[in-house]
Image 1 (cartoon, rainbow, N blue to C red):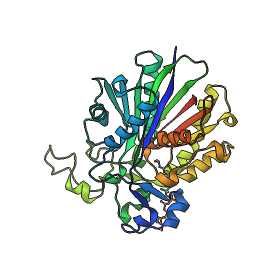
Image 2 (image 1 turned 180 degrees about the horizontal axis):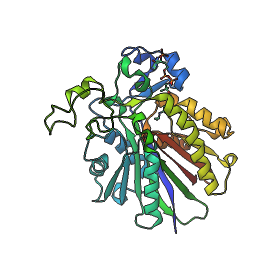
Image 3 (image 1 turned 45 degrees about the vertical axis):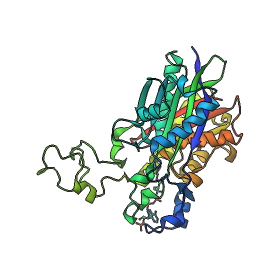
Length: 349
Ligand code: UT7
């Protein structure tokens, strides 16, 4: 059975850089708090009207496709991960298919937030291994800036997130000991409401996430998004950061070790760990737990913030562009986030 290899990789971040100091115009925060708690110095925000989650993905995808030595016409499947789609439906996959003038190929959208890219990669990997497809475009892209509560009320979340996009092209390889060795996917819905955006949605307070009456008098057709939801900021993401942090520092090392053990490796064998860029402190905890050196772990949250589904491919692309990942290197990708979902992939580059 062939393995899949990352044949091409690309990334795109918008031009507009927003520093911690810039955010103080909108909310009561400061550079010291943000850097101390998260490591973030700045992030990029998309142009309000000229850039979308899909248009950023187009830029990243073009680079990945060219580097894979192929063309958009040769791509035979798309897997697109995002939590900030252009439309509630249809998903971004079809918009990317249209924008790149691709053939009438399948386009699958993945909704797994921070681990979305790894879930997408895992799905694509299975299609390559079975021989079903030969050139799969896998994308993680986010335009968070359009959906954040940029007031003091939302400061614990809004300062963390940034916009950007990363893409890879997966192709089969018959080379021994090269390519994606394994992927590992997990979830625990017991904490679904800990990091979530409750509305728009169909839950009608079934899970008790609203502490205000909204449904009793509402006409049946008008419960998906209401004025009260907006008044109560339920159109913005909610996060209990401390709980997420505590779980993340357990699950990251666990899922990384799972990938290593499945392939007979140990932590010291990792050439480059690319963790989802959630918080520099989380990555440092993971590094410490696994006894990894500074040059075994790639961090770029300082410049981009947390770009959710885009963070792993952006970090992987940067590390590769800087020459920090070479053929034959053992590369581990890992992510944890909303759901909770978490995942890893071990790759012989
Ligand atoms: O990728 C998705 C997965 N997400 C994560 O992995 C995030 C994990 N969690 C975290 O990274 C951290 O919990 C945060 C960085 C989000 C927050 O750090 P924290 O140390 O947990 O802070 P906190 O929420 O407990 O807030 C501490 C204090 C509070 O003030 P009081 O009540 O102690 O007076 C907050 O109101 O800091 C205040 N605060 C802020 N102050 C200035 C919260 N946000 C801000 C802010 N600027 N932006």
